Image (cartoon, rainbow, N blue to C red; front, side, top):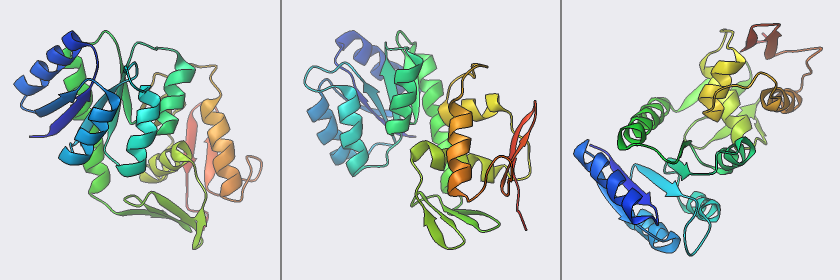
Length: 226
């Protein structure tokens, strides 16, 4: 049994989501304002937070920033804003998943189950390593040859995903689905940009790769350069 905290100001949506999740066996708390929700999350330490963006006292993106300052609880953004750049911004800011309104109770519950599976899988191991790269999953810290690498949230998630699949060629659609939690749009350069940033921080280039190797027309893989 897992616990879920819903922060949603629309009464009907909040009640429907609460009922659906409770019927599925979750312990559910809810609040209609950002500050009450923040206090509730701190006091109850839920397994998952479902966060609406259009709250009456504070924008949900600002509440997300405040939550991330005090907790690593997985957060699902519930939003009517289906703009891709906005969703990417929120995922980069610390959200773990998103669902676009209107959504059904069964859809939300499925997202929660999937998110909890990923969280539990990540928690089953403390570190990942390949070559001189070492990743502390709990501390969200990566090192290269004993020196800490300064990574933003998505760079860390991308590196972790690739190291967990070391030696395998993973497609851009897989990366987008697992790291950005979105279907891949063929013309999107987000992955290429983040791979370029990662290469620079790993001390390599696309022309002279060490860890990150692009397989043209297929995807990318990470290997032990030694």
